[in-house]
Image (cartoon, helix red, strand yellow):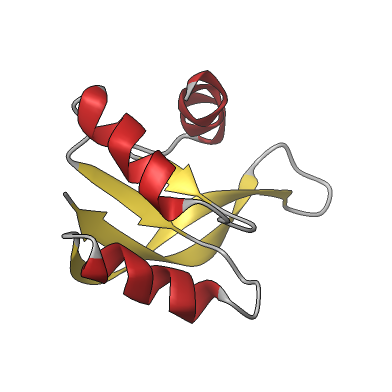
Length: 91
């Protein structure tokens, strides 16, 4: 949770973002609910991302829209982070 919050601030995003693999969505959502997280983004580009996004909806999350966030990669010759597409979910 602390890493997600730190990455959010460092990259300049306004919501916590799940990127990469997400092997235990149930545990993540339980933690989000315990900490009062009401929205999050999911920007995974792994081949299983659509199945994880579906799992989030099956566990009570609402897919609100597609959006753009600042990812972890930096623009060439810049300190700015590149924008990446993401699903926006609400809990």
